[in-house]
Length: 165
Image (cartoon, rainbow, N blue to C red; front, top):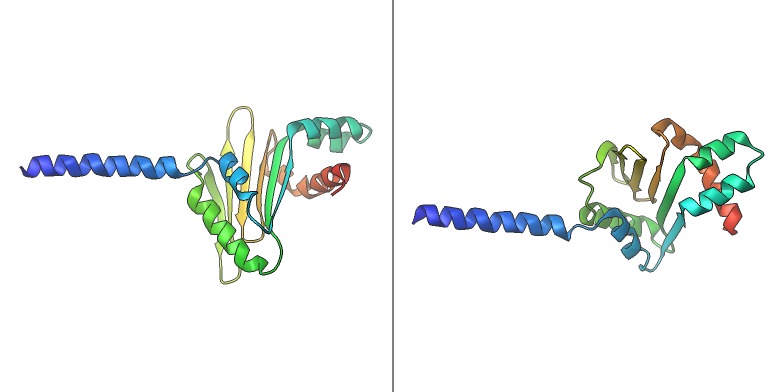
């Protein structure tokens, strides 16, 4: 009798573990579901846009080379009043409801004012970087390395200028 109870408990606990894993969203699903919230700014640049930018900035080889390494950028930022409170909620929900099992945590910071986690996922065809903080959530993918990320701010500005942001 005890053996049957233990087996039933083990089976039920394995099902609950599966349900918890399945209830977490993919990164893409989390971004899509987050853009419907009020006071959340969403920004995305796709590979097609980067290809267009490569052609537009062809006379600047360094910029062209960097842009050609980018596949996708997605950003979420809390907006409106009480951004700090909304940022903490956005951070907590993102971390709690997103499946980040394939990502490696590189750095984290948690203090009274802000929270920040920085992740990386490597594969043969691209690297993915994910910054989740109370100020913003940013996802970057491409054939770039971590050292290249410092140049990203300029690229985001170029992309923003191209689309009138």
